[in-house]
Image (cartoon, rainbow, N blue to C red; front, side):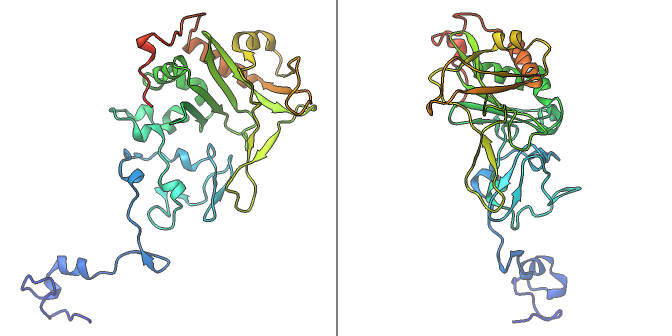
Amino acid sequence: MRVGRNDPCPCGCGRKYKHCQSGKADARPSPNVRGGARPPPTAAAQKRRQCGGCSACCGPALRINTSDLLVLKGETCPHLGEHGCQRWGTSLPDLCRDFLCNYLTEPVSLTVRERPDRIGVILKRTAHKQTRLHECEPGGLLRIFGNPFWGPVIRRDVLNGWSLIASFLGDPHNADSIHVKAIGGRLKCELTSCRQDGSPILVPTQPNHGTPVYDVLFVDHQNFRFDVLELIGDLADHPLIILTPPDTGASSQRISFRFTRRQADFLAALRRAVPLRPNEAHPSDPALLTANS
């Protein structure tokens, strides 16, 4: 039923409709998505800290592979505009709307200095005791250890036995990922599993809509294979080394690993940030049991 400008406002205020702003607001049709009502924000989106202009998760560091949107790693989301995402709150996939990096969820006061676009890394701590570092600006993986907030967080996680997984910018298939963990007071790491020619073994991830996306295959050893100090020493000044352990994999094929210069630089920075010594990281030490789950 249409309300005339000079008719009494349906809100009950007694004024004419043309003079009542609240009535006009109530009478406006609500925004809709493809004919339906706009969905309410999810619980994850409601509890987030404001991004404050950061759009690092829309850039080349991450990937999106859903039926609504496909953005490969190394590409920037096509819906990212000058003032942020142009589809926010409408048809944006839940995967984007619910994504929470640790800058948004840390229950402490953070400065703009700790934002992903300022430190150059999207830091995501998971319930599986993993700390993931996604480089979103060149050199971010080296700078984050010097950040006054995130540096101690990474050190604490590593000392508590958490896995540290880092992926480098400019690698569309995560072929330069590296997986580090503290075992027995030493930093150990798994590297990319490679074929005989040194090319990384890639496995498709799910869900897969359209163009396949891949993860690097890490060999599942009982313990991490390589000691960080030994790796850095072996690499010396070589830009690329293929390391082959003296055993075979589960398929009875010889396992080789690709190791790059920037992986060595990252490990050297991590080694300085987490100065482990034998028996230093003892699980009974109360100072090492303070990491949040």
